[in-house]
Image (cartoon, rainbow, N blue to C red; front, top):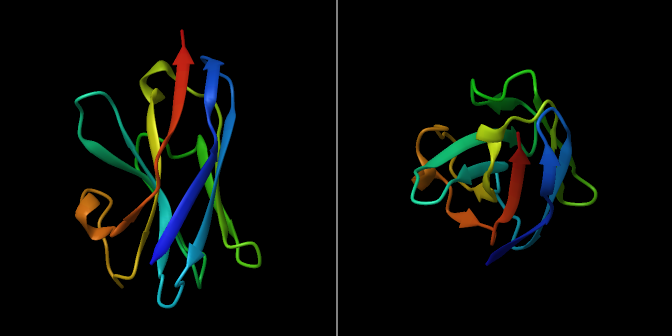
Length: 125
């Protein structure tokens, strides 16, 4: 079993910054990728940013490129998401995700078998 525990989030005004973190625990064997998805009320899940746990390669949704930065601390089994220049449309529940799949697509939430409970990010205009 794999457990994902998110921290961070909250409320901020447009243009502000927030940070999220996610600690992964349990059976970490062959966890190849971790990252973040988001989902609005009644909306679809959108891949935000993913990082390779071994090589550290990063992948971003076009909507957040240049504003969000994903990173990892292998010793702490933690993934971070630094969000800057936040916009009201970034308001969502943010979920930490992990997968044992070697390949994935940001457009395919089903590629990620492990999900955290989610943390809310609210950006006011």
